[in-house]
Image (cartoon, rainbow over all chains, first blue to last red; front, top):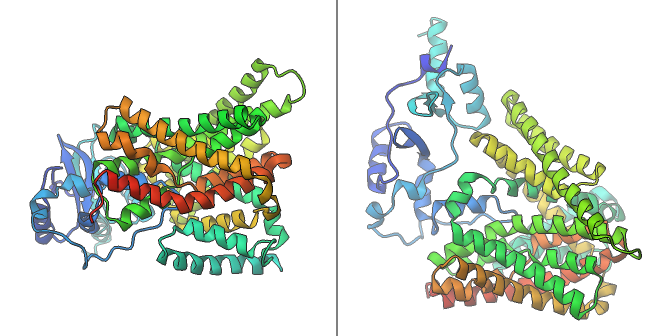
Length: 156
Length: 391
C-alpha cells in the first residue's frame, strides 16, 4: 500500500505572511493541528499548536533554531500567564515568526509502512506528502493509516 | 570512596548546586565547576581517583558529542539565514582572540610557540549560556541582541576548529622540539590530520545516513547515533586525526545529505544534560590548586588579551560587514564570558600534553571563573549602551 493511496489530497495550508489572528482562526476551525506553510507550491515550514507558544519568544525563530545547537544552554522557564503581550500582536506576529523550519515530508510513492516508521521515529501523527519535484500534494495522518488497515481487514 | 558512590554524589549535588546558583543568576556550568573544585581531591576529596584518571576519556566523549551537534550549523540553509554580519563578526572575534593571545604569550612572555598556540586557541571560546542568561534577565531585544545571540551561537564551532588546527600544529611542533623545526614537516603533519579527519567524518556520515533508513525506534536511533560518534572518535585517535574535526564533519555531512537527518541531533538531547553535568564537575575536580601561585603572569596575559582580541576582532567584523553603529562599538563586550567549551578543550590539551597539561588547565579554570564573574557585567554594559535593555 502506497502513501498516495491513503493520503488526503485536500490540505489546509498557510503562507509565511499569514497573521497570528488568521492562524488562530484556522486552528479553531479544524481539529488537526499540523499545518504546512507553503510558498510557490513547496513547503517552507510547518506550524503546530505548540508553536503558538513561540508568539511569546523575544527573538526571531532562526535565532532560536541556531541556539538549539549550542551546548550547555539551559531551557528558559517562561510563565506565559505573566508575560506582557499586546493585542497588536494578532496582526504583527506572522507565521514566519513562529513556524518550524525543520520538518519531515514523505514522497507520494513511499509505502505506508515507511510513513508509519517515520511517524513513530519522530513522534508525530501527520506527515506532508510531496511529489518528485517536492511540491505539496497531500497529507497523511496516523488515522488515515489505521483507517486503511481497518478497511483492508473489513472492520470499517 | 568507591566510583559508583562518587557518580551518584556528583549527579545529585550537581543538580542542587545548579538550582541554587541559578537564583544568583549564574549559569549551571559555573555551579558544576565550583562544585567540582569543592568535592575534588584538594578539598573534600569526594571524587574517586578512578573518575579523575578517566577525565581525558570523558572529555573526549563529551566534546565529540558537542562537536557532532555543532556540525549541524554548517548547512547551506543555516548560513543563508544567519547573515553576513553574524558570520563575519563571529569568525573575526574568535580569530582575534586566538592571534592576540598567541602573539602575546610568544613575544611578551617568551613562552614556547606550541604552548602559546594552545592558549590562543582556547581563548577563542565564548560562553553562550552566560550571555543568554544576561539577555533573558534584562529582557533585551533588538538588532544588537539578535546579532550577539547569533555570534555566541556560532562561536563554539569556530573555537573547536581553531583548537583542532592549533592542537595539530602544537603536536607537530612539540614532536620536532629541540631539533631544527622543519616548517614543511609541521605543515604536512597538520594538513594530513585535518584532511584525514574530514574524510573520516564524511565517510561515517554517509554510512550513518544510509543506515538511518533501517532505524525503526527512537532507542535504535540513539544507539546508532552514539555508536557513529564514538566510532569516529575512536578511529580518529587510532589514526592520530583530530577527534573534534572528524565529529564536526560527521554532523555537517549528515545534515547536508538530508534535511530529515535532524533527528540524529535531537535524540542526543535526551542524554546530554547528565553527561555535561558530570563533565564539568570533573573539570573542577581536576584543578591543581597547588599550581595557582605559578600561573599569575600567564593567566593575566591570557585574560587581558582574550578581551582585547575579542573586542577588536568583533568590531573589525562589524565594520567590514557594515552593520549598525551600536554593533560596531559594543558587540565585543558582549562576548567576554568564557566557560564550557574552553574547559573542554583545555582538558583535551591537558591529556595531549601531560608535561604542561596541568598548568594549561589550571590557568584556564582560573580564567574561566574570573570570566564568569566579569563577563555578565560586560554583556550588561554592551546591551545597555546599545539601548536594548528595557529599564
